[in-house]
Image 1 (cartoon, rainbow, N blue to C red):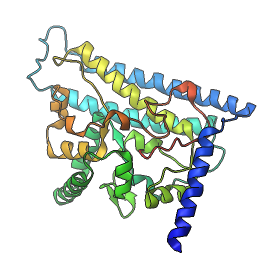
Image 2: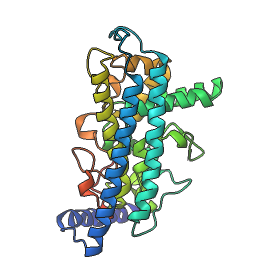
Image 3: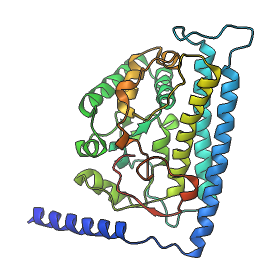
Image 4: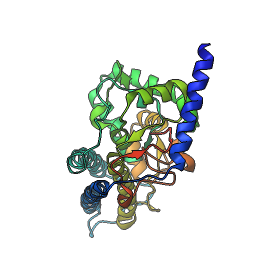
Length: 322
């Protein structure tokens, strides 16, 4: 009997999902004003991120009287510290952008996200190499040796069970993030951009998606997702351009989306991971996400949500990845 009820509920949810995908999204006039405000905030935050990356490129560019760093040489420590500082500033800019966009284009309903709600922590999380390098460094700086060893063991165990899974398979595994402790994020201050952008109007929908492995019929506050997606894309493009202009390595650096657990395991097990990545070593190649999974938050398939497409209230397209 209970199984039949669950099947009927699942059928109803699938019908609603199909209807939402077919129905045109009608926006009243006030939604256009909200979209304009949100798009302006996203563009402004993007410009500020570009300025931060340009400052990083200038600070790491070798002096003219010094010979260029060869591809086989390790970068100086100041370049590693500059990278950590850049990511810290981008994360702070994301928080500022989220506060600003909520003020200029407030969500139509209260968001359900809050302390202790960790349903989204069972989803696949795309992350860039600079973000995961800062995350690993923060763990080394704040954890005792025993605590850090315990984190490494949890990350390795989770990676062994999730390596190579796509977003749907990752959700079906129902395995929470290895950084969760007592239902709370233990690295909340340096959590990735994708985690900062994810949101939901209804925690019950998130819980149902995890427990029954179904695409959530939910509505996301899209401007928040757009802020973090735009920043991650800007970080990737900016660091690639900075590496090409400074020429510290043989080839321009490519900042690709990585799977959080796999990338964090590599960073934790490699003490000089940041220096080796800056030197051009493809350290995180095993953690790269396949093209289908390279998406974030409520962004449509194929990449981040451009500022011109920001909606104040948009249906979740059915993505199971964060």
